[in-house]
Length: 103
Image (cartoon, rainbow, N blue to C red; front, side):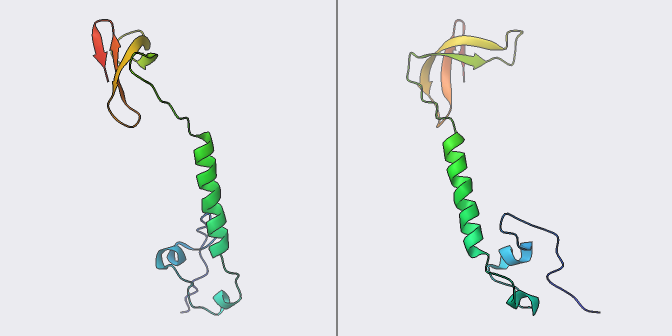
């Protein structure tokens, strides 16, 4: 019985087996000695992921008294117009809709 560590079909953005990513080093086999180093490919892939996510991420900043629409999950009207009362988190706000304070 022989075991080949390079017979995996699991391909990440790095193009290596999960065991290599977990251990943080190349698996020591005869075949691994002739394969190219993938650390540069991993860094390029991670850099591309960061650049794409920052570029496409919408940055919403609202100040108190700004008019916004809030999603209504309780009634027939899906969106209600309201006024921002205060910011409660990085992307969360309290909105005053006539007769209702929404989060």
